[in-house]
Image 1 (cartoon, rainbow, N blue to C red):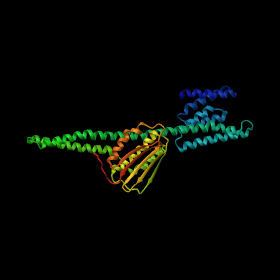
Image 2: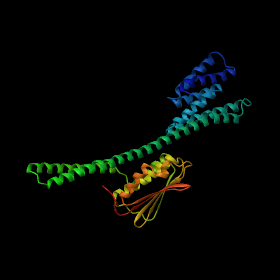
Image 3: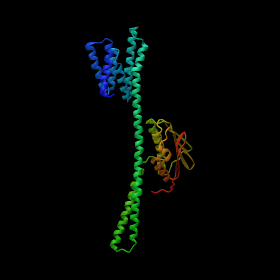
Image 4: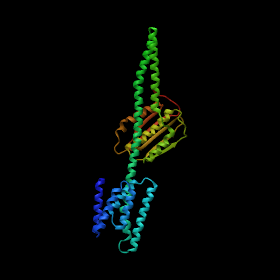
Length: 353
C-alpha cells in the first residue's frame, strides 16, 4: 500500500471503530483529523507520530490501525540508543496507564487483555519494523562488500590487459629500435633511432610502474585479514577464524596480498551464493608455507562458478601462482572449500611482472 493510500485507510478504519463505540459529532471529526496528521507525519517524524498514536489510544481506547502503523515505522527508524530509550519509555508509560485504568475500573477490561493488546498492536509492529530495517542494512552491507570485490577485480583486469597488450607492443618497438641501432645507418638517423629506443624503454618502464600501482595501490595484506573478518561480521555474515601453528610473516608483499585476496574471495563468494551460512576461515602455519582455507556449506543450488571457476577465481589463481603458491577449489557434496598454499619465502613461478 502506498503512502498516500495509507492515510485514508487508517483514518477510515480507526474512525469507524470509534463511531461504532458511540462517538459522534465534532469529537469524531477531531479524532479523524488527528489520526490523519499522525499517519501523514510518521515517515518524517516516526517517534512523534508513535507518541501521538499512544496518546490517542489512551484517550479513546481505540486507534488500533494507527498504533500498528506508527509502531512499525518507529521500529524501522530506530538507529541510536536514544531512539530506543524514547520508544521504550513511551511504551512503558502506555502500559502503566492501561493497567491503572484497568485497576480503577474493575470489570471494564481485564488487565491481561490490555497487555495482550499492547503486545499485538505495539510490541510486535516495533519488532517487525526493527527486523525489516536490520535486514535492509544487512543487504546494503552485503552489496557494498560485493561491489568492493568487483571494483578490485576490474582494476586487476585493467592492469592485466595493459600489461599484456601495451607491454607487448612497447617491447616490440624497443627490440626493433635496438636492431636498427646496430644497423648501417647515417649518424643523424642513428641518433633518431637511439632516441626512439630510449623513449620506448622509458614508456615500458612507466607502464610497468602504472600496472604495479593498479595492482598494489593500498594493497591490504595478511595483517588486514582480521579487519576483513570483523567488517564481514558487522555486515551480518557468520564468519569465524581459526589459526594453528606458529605464525610467521610472509616476507613477499605479493604473497601477503594474495593471502588477503584468498580470504576476501572466499568470504565474498559465500556471502553471495550461500547467504546466512556459517563461514570458517582457517590459517594453518607450516614450517615453510601458510595454508589458507575458506569453507562454507554448499548451497542448495550451487552457482555456475563453483564447477567451472568464475572470473574472480581465475584471476585469484594467477595472483597466487605469481607469488609462488597454489590455489584449489573443492566443491564437495556438503561444503564448498577454497584452499591456498603460499610460501613463507619469496618464490616466483612463471610470473611476468
